[in-house]
Amino acid sequence: QGTFIEEMSSFVGSNLTVANFSMCLVTDDALKALAQNCVNLERLNVAKTIVTGEALVPVMKSCKNLQVLDVSCCGNIKDKFFSYAAQY
Image (tube, rainbow, N blue to C red; front, side):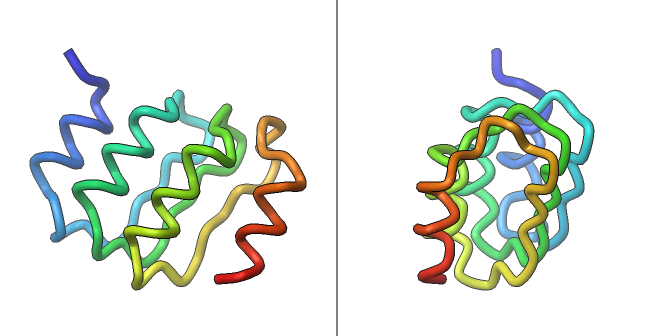
């Protein structure tokens, strides 16, 4: 059984444009499902979560309309991700 975010992303699919998961328990698998199902995402807030940069890369690749990505206070995101993100 998937997490709420995985199931929700499958249900709403490309209709989802804004997602705020700040201070929520968000797993890397949930973000990967979000990247796969919600390709029209424009704003994503995962501030103060345990997500990793590795899980955010698929989001950045799949969600071509992504304009805002809030990763403030995410201790598991390393400098390597920010170097990658700067290309977008």
